[in-house]
Structure formats: C-alpha cells, structure tokens
Length: 230
Image 1 (cartoon, rainbow, N blue to C red):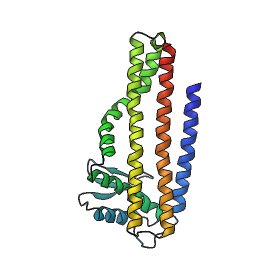
Image 2 (spheres, rainbow, N blue to C red; image 1 turned 90 degrees about the vertical axis):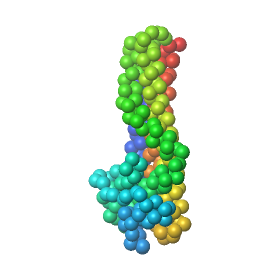
Image 3 (cartoon, one colour; image 1 turned 60 degrees about the horizontal axis):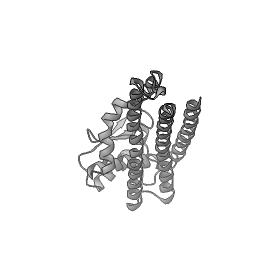
Image 4 (spheres, rainbow, N blue to C red; image 1 turned 120 degrees about the vertical axis):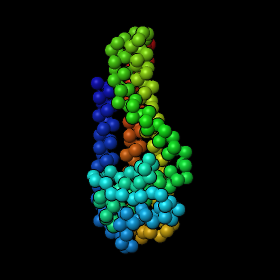
C-alpha cells in the first residue's frame, strides 16, 4: 500500500507539472516573434553562431518530441516547433541546440549521460521485477539466493536513478546556454524572452520531478529489502 501511495503521489505531481508545461507552451505559442524567424531558422542560426557546421536541423512528427541526437548529429524539432515563429518554438529550438553545443564542447555531464544510455536501456526494465522476485524468493529472511537477486535489482535501479540526476545538469545547462544566446544576440524582445525563459523553466521541472520520483522509488525498495532483512 505504501508503494502505491508513493507512486500515486509522484504521478500526481508529474501530471500537474506536465499539464502546467503544456499550458505554458500553449500560452507562449501565441507570442509571435517580431523577427519572424521559425524554430528551424532559430536553430540554424544558433548552431552557426557557435561555429557548428556538421549538425543538421530536421523535423520529426509528434508533440514535445524535440531532441538532439548525438549519434547522427541532428537537432530534431517537432513539426510545430520547426515551422512556428513564436516564443515557445524559439525556446525549444535554442534548447535543443544547447545540447549540440554541449556535444561540440565535450560537456562532461552529457558524455556521462550518453555513456549510461546503453546500461540503463538494459537494466531499467528488469530492475523492479528483480527486487520483487528477490523478496518473494526469500529476501525477507536476510540470506539466500532471493536476497542477492533483490540486491542486483537495487543496483540496476540505481543506474536509472543516477541517469535521472545526471540529466538535470545537462538539461539546465542546455536551457542556460539557449537563454544566454537568445539574450546575447538580441534575438527576442523582452516580452518574447520572458516567455521563452518561463517555458524552459517548466520544462526543466519535469526532469526534476522524474529524478525525485526515481530516488523515492529506489529508497522505498531499499527499505523493503534491508528493512525486511533486519
């Protein structure tokens, strides 16, 4: 019961933040840029201003599907961001280019997160099942095969938690780079800049909630394993 209360609470907070983020982006999508530049054009200019010539800006389907792919060096912008000419599109486009700049400058947190991707992709899906299976097999007794299975599950779960927390400085730094460029190059009016800044702050909060949720889940299951052992 305690686990479901924890998960329910985190899910509720996550939904509230995500819902607020959507409202913010909808609001700032109505703030049209005086410079008339689209998200694609914003992204291409930021890349050029940072001396990056080997990254392509492309359009991808979906909503909030924007991301930077370091494997093929592409800034992937959702269709609305790619084509639109508003404060929300400018914020997202510049943020994703912030990741491209991180990659070009070998930003340490980004390198560490990229290194963890293959590990997390394998371990995250099975971690909770290993813990639960270990508890069922006898982790409560404090010894035996089941206990070590549960420990392995906790180790796997810790990789996902570490990944979530490493993501925080990566995302916040990308937003800071984006905002600094938008302001430094006078790309936006004060009103447009304020909207972009607010939108990126709410986007960052989704990652913060995810990290807190991952840590809370890890601590809960650790208490079940070690607490039951005692």
